Image (cartoon, rainbow over the protein chains, first blue to last red):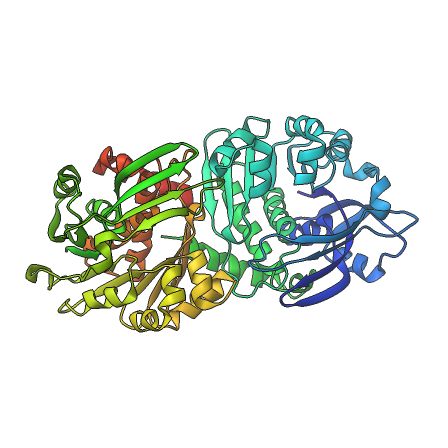
Amino acid sequence: MTVLVVGTMAFDSVETPFGKVDHVLGGSATYFSYSASFFSPVRLVSVIGNDFRQADLDLLKQRSVDLAGVQKAAGKTFSWSGKYEGDMNSAQTLDVNLNVYGDFKPQLPQAYKDSRFVFLANGSPASQMMVLDQVAKPEFVVADTMNLWIETSQADLRRLLTRIDALILNDGEARMLAREQNLVAAGEKVLTMGPRLVIIKKGEHGSFLLTRDGTRFAIPAFPVPVVKDPTGAGDSFAGGVVGFLAREGAHDDATVRRAMVYGTVMASFVVEDFSLEAFKRLSAEGMKRRYDQFVKFISL
Amino acid sequence: MTVLVVGTMAFDSVETPFGKVDHVLGGSATYFSYSASFFSPVRLVSVIGNDFRQADLDLLKQRSVDLAGVQKAAGKTFSWSGKYEGDMNSAQTLDVNLNVYGDFKPQLPQAYKDSRFVFLANGSPASQMMVLDQVAKPEFVVADTMNLWIETSQADLRRLLTRIDALILNDGEARMLAREQNLVAAGEKVLTMGPRLVIIKKGEHGSFLLTRDGTRFAIPAFPVPVVKDPTGAGDSFAGGVVGFLAREGAHDDATVRRAMVYGTVMASFVVEDFSLEAFKRLSAEGMKRRYDQFVKFISL
């Protein structure tokens, strides 16, 4: 089955202890799409400025990512600049320019409207709902969010949470949304807000699943000795998760557990280099090999 | 097989968001012994002052902990006072009084000298080696350490590392000892310092095993929605690990993996209440039940 994703396509400038890159391909929907494309065809909804590079579009096209939903607007592409230090678990944002993304009204091409698996990458809850409104019969909707929306759009966010099946968010965001320091209790509280599943991303510490029917499941991150740039790890994780679910056409507990492993594997590659460089070198076989290694890594 | 442990017996005063206790039973060797006693007989080496309570000694005796190695010295028992806030992953020490522990020269009773499984709880590397010198034929020696010794006794610590089989330490300590921010790389560097196994404790995020022959294994913590007091979690974890290894009389990879699960389970109980209160309520059946739950929690 195909996956529908809405989110940013961006130019990133990133500095880490391992180097510095300027104006490279980034964005939540970009990372998600490339990652999900290892499992399913992807339908992408986003907006780019007239400075966007054809080579970057071609990169996604080659991965069977449908770009019919990518609007081209007058102006510059969304750009972000950030820095990672120390344990590199969180970025320090140096600069954000919404540019054409500021006026973005997501419009689904007619052919996208029958999508069943949907990922609403981080964006305003209002815009995320605008996408949902256009999907005829969504079967499994996953959303991401961030501290900004928890702080400034709590009412919209709470409405969104009643319309989705799963929320993927990081540990700090879960604690903030639930107003609860204990991560297990925080996850349990988020479950009461609407979603049937909550997946908490913990960076180098892995991820944690809670479901309304009582399932609890956690896995560590794949051990990567050199993390060059964590940008895109969360969206690549989500790409593996939702891409795999769409491929299986299922979202029962057992499938979600395996999906989290695929998400973990995809994230472990993307952090090994800047931008999408490590993905570009990755084959389906290389991905499957690491999946098998990871299963050994977590098995008794 | 029995387990030999050397470490502190203490009085703790602890404040957490869930309450405050004053002068309750604590200490690394105490937590370790009680935890390990679920798996193996324990031989305890420590020192107490003349203010130590008979009821606390009786508590350990009932758990088949051999107290022949506990010296009684004139003066007060080691005491520690600390506070946990926020995510409760680390304690803020308010006060430490070494008291009789300051002059402690560990002396093994003759009957302890044939011990094969040894745990050197956190203490000066010099005193840890003093214990090792008295064990005739140690088969598997595990040590803990802390930032204080990494900072002040690095030379002794590095000597100790060449004499032990496994080092258990927390993530911050691993990063400090290896002078390396990436935890995987830090663990790999610690392996080059001597131990065949390194187990990195990550508090609420679980634990991570690295071995010289290339094994990598990680498990999350058991999801505890109400952590009342994390004091003793690390030593209770170690008690489960080393206690189980001694029970099996083995330390191959597969056994170490299962031992880490038992350690995780023991730690998950102790944090549910202050001091050793949750242990006192715990039965062998209750422990085994949570082991089975945990295996489900981490299984694909």
